[in-house]
Image 1 (cartoon, rainbow, N blue to C red):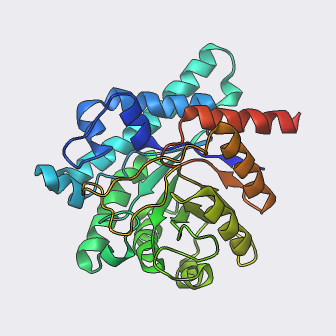
Image 2 (tube, rainbow, N blue to C red):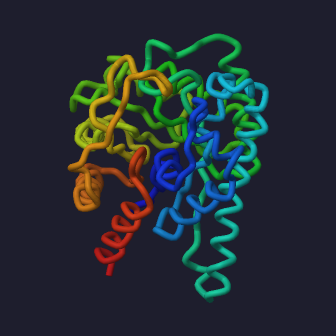
Length: 306
């Protein structure tokens, strides 16, 4: 049984005219356009996503501090969770009005992101502050989420920090870990660790599902093949559409990222089918993957089940 995730929130917000000039990225929309965040969630649900992810990827002190909002991270994380839950409730109500209530069974995943920069294992923080921030984010999200998603983890240690807090303070809700990979298929995580090494580090805390995200589709496919031989837990992937990311990239420096032109909807669906053949049961999209991609995947899956 395949569970379809949503796609990328940040790029979708930008596509809809919510621009960030302050380094806050998708958190800016929580301040300026929460209605658009809500609508993006609803559009992913309408497309066929069965898990949507809270817009809390950048509600972290290191980003918010660029606009003197570091102390607002708990409030904004809580808002991100509420908007995702509201989207599910409104989608369900709309289906009830259409007498199709049975079709909307959507879960909310609470996003627990890197606390410094994505793709940068060299910048992963440690210490008491890390534990405190993750604890606060988990507690802020918990009332409105069904599970926690520690995503774009670039190392085993980074995943351990986030997942430990989710397990400790998440009221028993499932915890998923999603690692980001070296773009060269078969080369492990961006930290240089093998998948087996990263898995061994966090296995003792009993993660509920293992995924790979925000990496090229090809690297994720190879990683899924490796992971399937290492665990009997659910596995999955949600790739981005980026060209290779420069190792010195940060969210607001001068190093730019661009999207691959070859990852169109047909290519995305084809890769998703290969993921499923490799053992994945949870598949979606990350940066650059909009509702139209998720809709195409859901339609292909529905046709296959007929």
